[in-house]
Amino acid sequence: MEYTEFLESKKIGFESFGIEVDESELNPMLFDWQKIIVKWALKKGRAALFEDCGLGKTPQQLEWANQICQKTQGNVLILAPLAVSKQTKEEGNKFGIKVHICKDQSEVKSGINITNYEKLHNFEPSTFTGIVLDESGILKNFAGKYKNEILEAFQHTKYKLACTATPAPNDYIELGNHAEFLGVCSRSEMLSMFFINDASHTGDWRLKGHVKENIFWQWMSSWCVMLSKPSDLGFEDGGFTLPEI
Image (cartoon, rainbow, N blue to C red; front, side):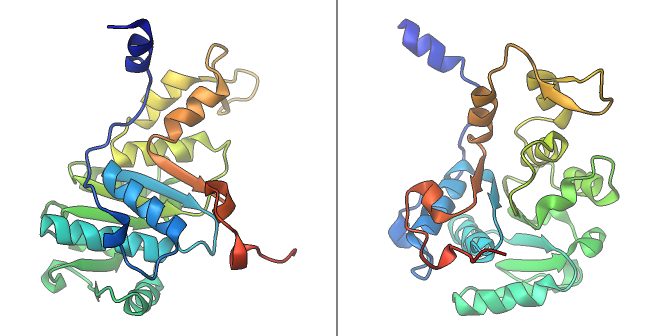
């Protein structure tokens, strides 16, 4: 083994074990940059989309779920905040993707199903091939009821997607909880690997002295996308440039 190969083998990252698709197979109504993200998330198998509001996370998560259903012949469950289910179903109609709103396991149909977080206890997680968390910021509270219930329920689900607006980059607990949900590593493992508890500010975490900041974010980029505008990926921003507040 060459020395450069040895160094490559020591890189910390999250391996891909998802499904390969060609961009031509993806919904033609998606923007090109959205197709790239969906293709990447499908290849990873488990991924997080941290995108600012207005960038179309809903159609991206729907196409991700649609492809998982088609390729695996399994069912996908989307968990969303209260009252978002109907909006997601309507968005699905625009993109030609069927979404079933359900209250419990007896109402689950073949394909994509959606319910709100409060009804999770009415479902059997093991029957779903994939899980999508809409507004996955619900994982933020490390001791929260729903966070613990979600982590336990979908621990063995093969395909996972978490979608939320870009989290605060210094909210390491939220990032760690997402990593744990996706099966990258536990929150405590992430903290011990990259951080130390700041003794001068109890509860605050800072990168270890020997860990360069770019190494942490390279690790993050192995399982998540952080996007504030299409030009972050080299595309034209177009109508995604919002006016000043």
